[in-house]
Image (cartoon, rainbow, N blue to C red; front, side, top):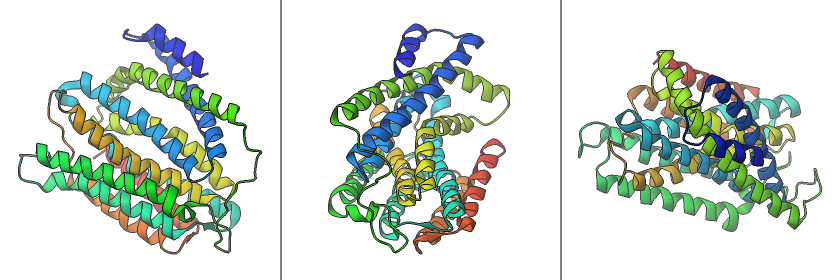
Length: 351
C-alpha cells in the first residue's frame, strides 16, 4: 500500500482532481494510514516501550505539520487560524477522544483500567503547560491587536515548546523510563510485551522504510484532497475551523487504532503514552515549525483561543487531572472524557 500511495501521488500531484479520482485517492489514503500504523507498530514492538509510542507520535506529528504548512502556504489570510485550529483539535481528540475510548474499552473488558499516575501525570502537566503557552497566552497579550503573538513572544513560545518537549522525551526514555511502562494490577512495571515474537532487525528496518513511504503518501494525498475538504466545509456552511478538525482526525487515526489495540490488551499506559504523546508533539513540534514558516508565509498567524475553547481546554485539564491521580479508571471516567469530546465536536460545527 505505501508504494501504491506513492505512485498515485506522482500521478495526481498539482492537478485538479475530479470526483471519481478524489474517491480513489481517499481510499488509498485510508490504506496508507493503516499501513503506517502496521509498520509503526512493528518498529515500536522491536524497540519496546516507551520508545515505540514516541516513534508513532513523532511520525503522526510529521504528517500534521506538513499538512498545516502546505495548506497555510496556499490559503492566504483564510488559513491564519489553521495551525491553532488543528493543534487544538489534536489536543482535544487525544486528551478526550483517544483517552476516553481507551479507558472505556479497557475498563469494560478488564474490569478496571490501570496505569502509572507518575508518568501519565508528568505527560499531562507538560501538555497543559504547552497548550497554555502557545494557545492561551496569545488571547491576553497586548503587544499586538487580536489573539496574536509579537515576534519576540512567538520566538519565546517556540523555544519553550522545544525545550519542554526535549525534557519530556529525556525523562520518558532515559531517566524515568519505568514511569511510562505498562503496569500490572499490583502496580509493577511490565518491561517486556510477550504477546508476539520480536521482529528481526532486517524486518524492522524494512518497516521503518515503508513507514516513511506511507507517511509521504499520506501527506501528499491529503494535500490533494484538501481542496475538496475545504469546499465541502464551505458548502455545508460550517465554520472554517472544521477544516482543522478534519485534518487532526485524519492524522490521529493511526494513533487511535494503535491506542485501542493496546487498551484491548490491558496495556493502558501504552495507550495513554500514545494519546498524550501525540498531543504534546502536536504542540511542541508544530508551533516552533509554524513559527519558522511564518517568516516567509504571508498573512497573520492567529494562535489565541476564543472564550468557548478556553472553557473546554480548562475543563479538559481539570477532568484529566482527576482521572490521572488515582492511577485507575472505571467506565465512568472514560464516559466523561467522551462526552467532553462530543461537546467539542458539536461546538466546532455549531459554535
